[in-house]
Image (cartoon, rainbow over all chains, first blue to last red; front, side, top):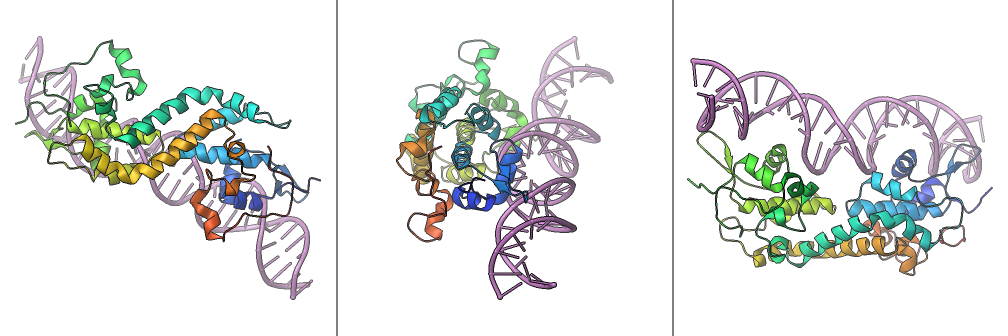
Length: 151
Length: 151
DNA sequence: GCTTTATCTCAAGTGAACTTGAGGTCGTAG
DNA sequence: CTACGACCTCAAGTTCACTTGAGATAAAGC
């Protein structure tokens, strides 16, 4: 039928992941295949790009769920171009920017809360998990002690 | 003894993590505490910085094990400065650079394997898991089909 | 004194991302 | 025709990073 399509073993070799991982990704809906008469999987080469994106995303702390949300926005039927990928990935922009900034601070000095001039963790613009301050009212936090934050 | 030190509940509130997480981090050797006569934990404020680094590292895909390796290089006894952190974090430099580059490609175009001009996944300088090529012999890979890699 | 709130320990449970294993099919090589 | 390798399914196991729960203690408020 489509002689250029790849078997699961070939895909695994080319993508640098075990066959079991491809089975798993397919079960999770991240990639797709069709079946030969012998019920063997065959993959369009495009799936290689999807796998690459999954792997890269995982190494930078993006979950499979988040990746799937983006991949689901990439068309399957047509020749997919750079623009299609960019459009699908646009919801990631803010998250990726944030991660990049965090990484740069970590790399450049590992002193990101000194570097950004804040005195305590909870008003650091780089470390504000779940926007805790917002929930509990604005303004810097106070506590009973008064020693400074230098560590 | 040290009235400015924080209880586990205070630490949890300030770091934005549950108490259970602090117990866990302590069990894993990422942070340290002393105990009151009532066997309650007390933390030096410096531990807040360690917690912040752990949290940031996790969000960008660095494992606790890797974080611990770096934190173990940060002195506990003395006033720790920016330089001490930077020195301890130096083994991270390459890994962090790589992650930053991956993230930027993902963000900028999501077409990182088109963008970098390579034809296939396995000689892409950005996606070379475990340096598979190196293990299997140098040179680009060939496969039986010849359709191009555009997806 | 009594209750509440914060803490303690330790064991077991959870979700994500896979991996491993058992048991079976298919197609080509010898 | 038999062996072999590559593939199949499905269930169970593994690691990481925590979370939850049971049962106990201890200082603080009424």
